[in-house]
Image (cartoon, rainbow, N blue to C red; front, side, top):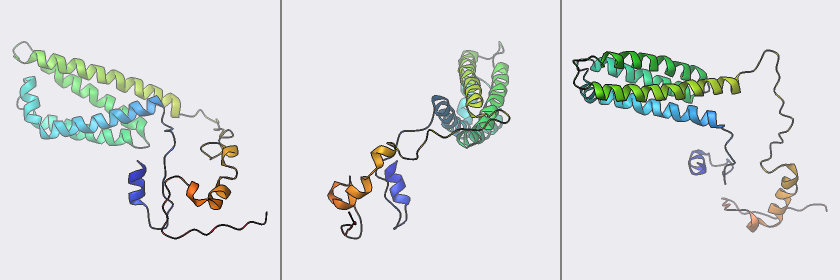
Length: 194
């Protein structure tokens, strides 16, 4: 990721040497993965609607499947945004529509009802993941009335204040000790009054 950050930086901006650990919790990662899954599924529903309807035995509903694909993509982008709870809620509503549509494919005269039953089971499993992600995300990111967040244990330094003390002075004294650093202008040693 630091490679992409360095490509997008302006000439005078500092170079990203390495990134720190992720601050995403497992529920945030689940929501992010569901968002990407939603976008991928939506693209498949838009571009392969004919194959999907043929496999499920619901030919003639290609436009409905394409509309569901557009909905999936929108839900995916909302799930990846800062308003992930709205995105996850829209995914659950979409899952309900998918289940209702797949239930119509379970009629006895459908020769592909086994495929529809398998698809229905898969949608039910994803719905369960959506419900879990929504519940955990809501519990983690919702503040109660009057509750104030306390960031008193944070310093802003990745390895803590003590590990950072004197690091800049050491780096100025010996420029070769800087890890993977390339600058466009030559360094001059700093003079200190010590």
